[in-house]
Structures are given as structure tokens and as C-alpha cells.
Amino acid sequence: GGLLAPLIIQQTTFPLPSCIMMAADGWYIYNGEVIPPGVTRVRIHESLTVIPARAFRGNRNIEEVDCHDRVKTVEEYAF
Image 1: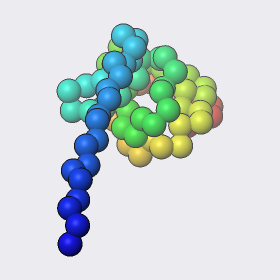
Image 2: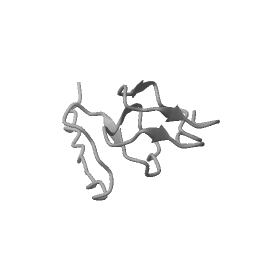
Image 3: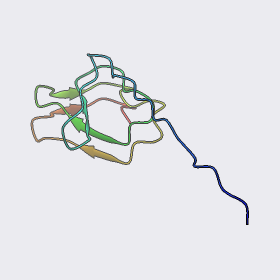
């Protein structure tokens, strides 16, 4: 047998822009801004009472949305 060279993988992380809020448990906090691509779990910020039209447009990776009971309106085509 030949010798195998070790495989070294360098991991690079990129900081999220300051406007992107992530909870400690990995949920994206939706505060009315555009949701970044690749987000799978969204928690509606407690200050929001309306989920606007097309809020989640084009985000086909979203699997879960955690919504509080103070949201009074979900506009047409929000999802």
C-alpha cells in the first residue's frame, strides 16, 4: 500500500451583515427586511403585527415559520 496524504480542508466563514438578525437557536428573525437566500427557519419579530405581501417571495427553502399571536394581518401572497 501507498501512503495517503492527509486531506486538509480550510473552512471560511463570512460575517453576516449587521441587518441580518439570527437568534441563538439558529432561527432567522424576520423584521420586515428581505429574507436572505438559504434561510430555512423564520421567526417573526415580536414588534411586527403585519406580514406584508410577498414577504417570503422566492424563498423556497423555508421549512418553518414561528409566528406570535400579535400578528393581526397576513397580506395577500405573503407566502
